Image (cartoon, rainbow, N blue to C red; front, side):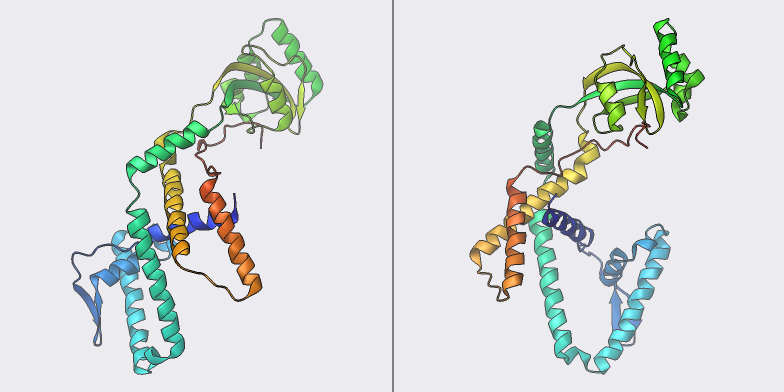
Length: 304
């Protein structure tokens, strides 16, 4: 994934997290000298609390936010008395912050609030349709320390012994109590030697020679082969929403760039900016490399 793509997604997430609420009740909740702290300010302070406060009860979070807001008002009052509001550096910083907040407000209106459930579902269907078909297999294995042990197990299987029972009796893998059952998995979930042998088998068959990996020697049996099911919408909804918002955001930027000339005087900075702009344009045009992926946790397989 291109770095600029990651930055855009991160920006989307950050702006959504810091979106300002519409405050119906903006009552004064505290006074610090002549300065007032309104409910809207307290709500903003809560929204911007450090993540370490996330697990605290709601009332404790309110107290922590209020304490921080009072601290800000106390020192802000002193700064006003010192004339710091007229300092050029302060004014420059406030102008930058104002621009950033306008950017965020515009983003919220035309990206966050403008993204509909229908758009997200349509993008999900598009991404699912573009996913390459993948097969997954349901396999079992018996893991032992030596090649001779594995060969002896294969002989017992050839004689008609039950695979699951042999796994319970001989396997050193923690899943031995489940008869060596690894469940369903796709390619890329196992170590290469194991995967190559497993995917070469047909349903109901087992390896006729031991399979060596860094974990020991395996005897593998494939129970079933099927097409892997795509991820459910609810499992990837937020990821897909980020893709929709990313595209809306990049489209807004492209439109704005087309109407305003951007002139960068430093040659190195200009090249860097142009590289980022090209990468962003490529992200918008190319199929999403953050397409929905199966979010299920990895099966308890030998890829340890």
